[in-house]
Length: 104
Image (cartoon, rainbow, N blue to C red; front, side, top):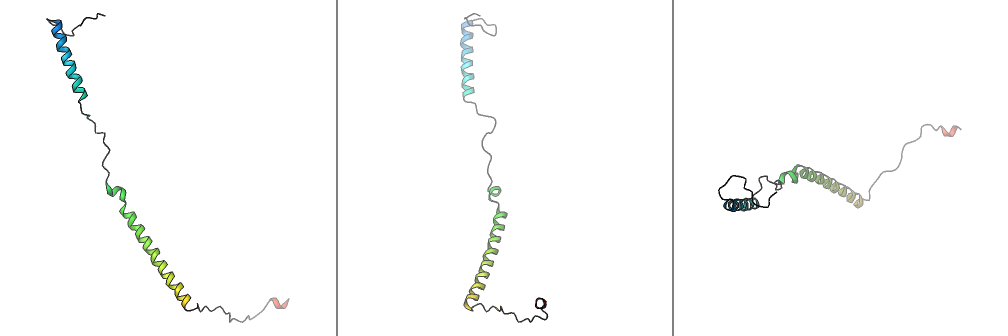
């Protein structure tokens, strides 16, 4: 290959054509450097209602309120037992009608 400039199109003056080609190439390089991307590569928008899960939070809150209410009722029952000494009837007044073990 020659080291001399070979224009791609036929021309009258090779030096002038070389200058024009070089100018066009420099403009082309500048346009490529300043080109904006066509494809949007930014992250998609995040929506709060997709991450917050309001229904789940509501159900959890209701469950915790039921537990809290049950705990409060148990505490009231325990405190009532502690104040009144329990009063548990643990005596067995039933009479054995027949004893099989005594016949042995």
